[in-house]
Image: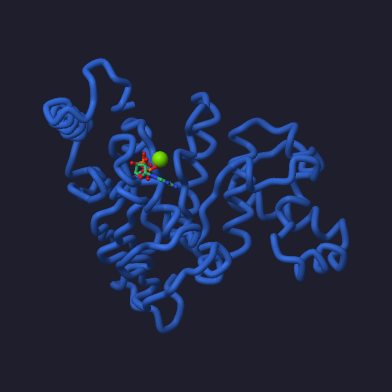
Length: 270
Ligand SMILES: Nc1ncnc2c1ncn2[C@@H]1O[C@H](COP(=O)(O)OP(=O)(O)O)[C@@H](O)[C@H]1O
Ligand SMILES: [Mg+2]
């Protein structure tokens, strides 16, 4: 359901001409993306193509040199991660997000701002547990014991809790930078199911970076390819294929070899 006053046709997140350089390195050369409500958009591309930098800009961690960011059609100026959160934008970095010694339910309630630490004390433990349990059930994240300390969970479970916390605290745009890296099939499935549930049942819009095309096709509605700081390809997943994406990457790799940017046998395309 769309909030009153929000036009369903307007992308939840739009960027226009985002550029960023680090000294002599031009990381982003004018990135335009559009993310619809409840859409999952995958970002792929070689190492160094600018994907992570783009995510860091959209979550307020870094400032662009130029370009605009629009949320629900209105330009926003993100000077910090806190600013971005206030607009419902949140990047989830699995381990950084949780306090290892706190339980699952405490982590779900823990906010980064001191004001809500007050709320932690105010809410009864029983109520927190019940709400945490209800919310996790609601988004179909099964954690056997919500009393368990975060550090005892698997990587997939920790990632799921971090995502759950962001959305429980009203993130409407989630940014995930390689959320499935170093995860086994079962762990990946947990996150893939969660992303799908949040997008289709709760209207959360999700930007996800992943190198694994099989995951992307399972996860995403649409894919954007980053090449040298630009989006060079934008397709719905049903309008492209594993073969087409692979071919794009291989030809980019060949181009870079020809240009002398990478050595043959370099792991640069990983
Ligand atoms: N903090 C930084 N300082 C200097 N260069 C950076 C910094 N962050 C990224 N870069 C450079 O910007 C380019 C894009 O990097 P990145 O956004 O990490 O690409 P990707 O995530 O697609 O692999 C690379 O050349 C990288 O070395
Ligand atoms: Mg990266």
